[in-house]
Amino acid sequence: MSIGTLTKHQTEQPIYGNWVSAKLIYIPAALTLAFFVLSILFALPILIISTLFFPPFVYFAYARYRFSPAGGNIQARIQGLVLSYLEWDGEGKAVDIGCGNAPLTIGIAKKYPKVKVVGIDNWGGAWEYSKGVCERNAEIEGVRERVTFRKASASALPFDDEAFDFAVSNLVFHEVRDARDKKEVIKEALRVVKKGGRFVFQDLFLWKRVYGGVDDLLEAIKGWGIEKIEFRDTSDSDFIPKALKLPFMVGTIGILYGQK
Image (cartoon, rainbow, N blue to C red):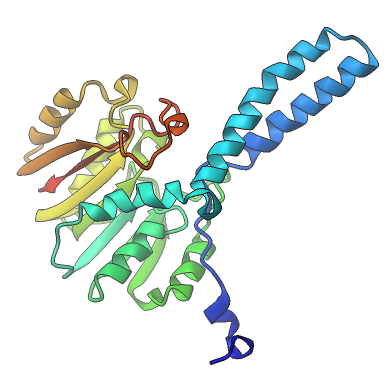
């Protein structure tokens, strides 16, 4: 088939978004420029204010680039860490909690041809994600008939107890604003996993202010009757640039995985 005969569906690429919002680049860039112009027009000391906004502009522009396919696709590779811990026969139903634009939802469906996957998200205005984009991405990737998407909060999943054979989540739990104790979000995610089912959750689990110590977190989860729980520090992965390993970026990520 020649390039000229390819359909729009065959040439269209999925849109998975970027963890660094464009606002984090445009706002400091605009403030840098505004105060620079003011320093020229009115007073040189204002130039000092301009320099305060320039480093955030440079850093977030760099981070957004490195997370993108053009900059090494670090975002997709971090998401891929979740898939690398999947230990499952692919039979049954899975849920992706906080699916964004559905890279993991679709990744699971592509890896396991028999699975049905539900992706849930709030799709708030703070991120470049939407349910419509999820559905279009699934169609482009050829898995639309096996995935569904629902709007919901990770703190109150709209599913019965033990509804799924497998649950995944990636860098979501710490963002759930309607749950003060983020451990309760983990507990809610495990609630919908069948007894004997599997789970893989990646989040900022090394962020002590949010989760406390890892050992204490593991003990708390074991106390909920979880059969097997393990932790891996994924923040030290070789492919993640040092500049992105700052605590407010991905320097505290880790994976909780196991069997209920």
